[in-house]
Amino acid sequence: MTRDEEYDKKSADLEKFIRDNRLVSKEAQMNQMMGEGYRDPRFIATTGNKNIDHWGLHPLAAEGSGQVLSTSDLGMEGPDSLRLGNLGTYNKGTDKMTWKDTPFTDKGAVQVHELIHRATHKSGWMDNYRKRLKNKIGIWSNSKFENIVSEGLGEAYEHKKLGGDLSDDDFRTNLHGRVEKFTRRTNLNSEKTTDSLLKALPTLIEDFETYLEELDTESYKAGGLIMNYGDYGRNYT
Image (cartoon, rainbow, N blue to C red; front, side, top):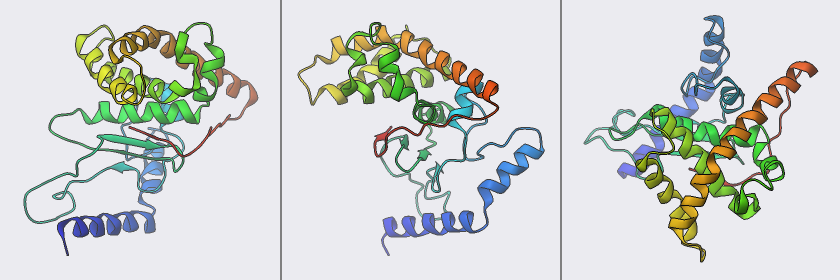
C-alpha cells in the first residue's frame, strides 16, 4: 500500500467511525447543553458576527467537513506531511467545507474565509446582491464576476480576522493573487481589476451584512427561518 493509499484509507475509516457514532451531532448537542448553542464542533465557535454565524455555521455542514488531517494526525509513521492544495474549500453543491492547519497560517482566519462562502450562499445573498447593488458596484454586478466577488469577500473577512484593514498593502497583494487567477482566462488587466474590486468591497460587505440583518428581522417577525440554498456545483477556496 502506498503512502497516499494508506492516507485515504485511514481518512475514510475515521470518517466512518465519526458517522457511525454520530460524534458531530452528539458534540453539537453537548455544546447546546453547556450554553454554547447548537454549533458544529468541527469549526470555530464564531466568526465574530452573529448573523454570519447563523448562516455559516448552521445547520451542520455535510459529512466529510472539518479539518483536513496531516499524516501524524492519522497515526501514520514517517515524517509528518499534509497534502498540498487549497488551505480551505467550500462546495455549495455538497455543502462540504474543509480547512487545513499549517505553521504558516491562522486556522481561525482560514475557516472564516470558507464560512463566508457558505453564509453568502445559504442566506441567498449571492443570488440577490447584483440586483440590490446594480448601480453601485460597476462591473461587479455582472454575473460572470460572481466567483471573484465571493473570493473577495472571503479574503476580506479573513484579513479582518487577523486584525488587518482593507487599506493594508498585504491585503491588496493577497486580493491581487485571487484576482489574477481569474483574469488569466480573460483580457482584463489584473492590477486594474484588483483596484476596482478593492473599491467595491466596502459596498459589498456593507450590503451583505445589511442583508443578513434584514433576514434576521424577517425571520423574527415570521417566527421561522428562511433558507435559500441557491444554485449548486461550484467550488470556492
